[in-house]
Image 1 (tube, one colour):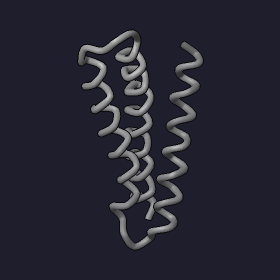
Image 2 (tube, helix red, strand yellow):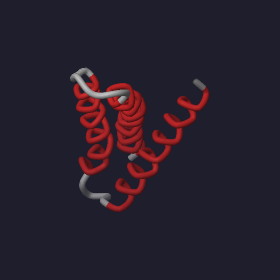
Image 3 (tube, rainbow, N blue to C red):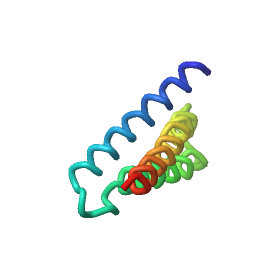
Image 4 (tube, helix red, strand yellow):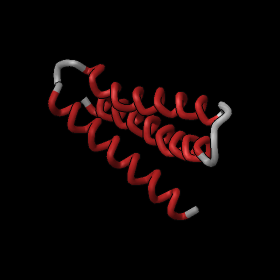
Length: 88
């Protein structure tokens, strides 16, 4: 369980860093910061949908765990973009 939380934390830190870098790189277009978080949430929803489909072996379990990693990372990425917007 601790390892899963560590992986989620690392994924969230990577998304936060990418959001921060995109925010600094594209200062005049505010919506670019939100792309990474939205993409992570969309990917997590797709992985959750795919985990519910019939599959062979533990493929569904792997997709569900990936969805558990991407969803909080996407939420934290969007929260980072909101915080960056409110600081301006």
